[in-house]
Picture (cartoon, one colour):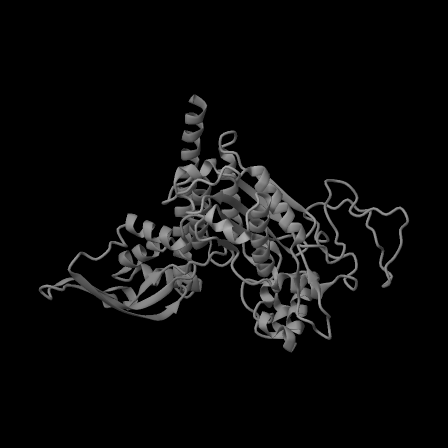
Length: 460
């Protein structure tokens, strides 16, 4: 035994435990979660009429006297099993708003629906991959005030580590980059208001009358570009005033919605608080705005493709995108330990420095240094767009027989406390095997479903 590794010794210890079978059931119930949360406590359900105990569960009967539940982390770099589950929920959440289902009527597929991409503005020229073309060719050459070349004649591959890095870090506007991230949420809110205002004015309505005629629903995901600047992908749908159950007015067309999105994105402006160190910066969306119509009658698969794209991105961690860290940074020195490029570390240091200024205190930049100043969730949606994560989790629990509501005339007392998280070395090895098996089975099931769907579509 002494010649075995710590992992092997721990795995053998677990396998010899009399409650190993039940312990393995717990691992499987979490989907092989890499960092499960351990709880201790009990749940008792009794009849309110007779005071008879109908059901009692206590973790004292469990291995280690605890119950393991999923960590539910969305990042694949932190917990791959939970990220796959989150991606599946995101797919259904976005898809339901496009094609119906999950309490959303199928009639939404005939509504005006667009997939829009809004980008950050330029904060300085960066190296780019241009499909085999020179990065930034300049006939006159030239150098910036810091003595660096203003152009680049290299044809970068997309995997080139130079792609996304500034041509001159000293010329790059790092404070504007960070502050744009910190105000991205406000820019989006102003953008949505602008879309409603443009739609209303285009048909002669007062802005205050718009809710009585139509409703704008959306789901958006934030994605970091190679230059470490966020851009936003959004599914935008126009409904009637009651939401998904109501048809939009006759004037609600794809063309009018497209115009409203482009006009609003081009005119939104947010100003930062004045700072003696930075000044007052005007912040806007970038010039690159892409708006595409989603037509279910002509190309029904485009909706699934959009939902799959969004679901894939929300599970990416900062290490995968190369923009930031997956955890909060507590000190200035923590920045040096982040496996990131010089460009990203400079953005982090800018966050930390600006976060120490009184005028930027409400932005809490130091708390969001790990995301380069960007605040908020990766995925957000309007209330009426589709279902919710909570509803999807409840539906899954009910399907698995874990979330049955209490019977009429009964009451439940529950007392739980947190007692730890994570795995021992041997348990981590076993959990990884369970997660791999479940992922493989899921991939096979999806492949068979896709094959069957393809046959059905072909025969139709």
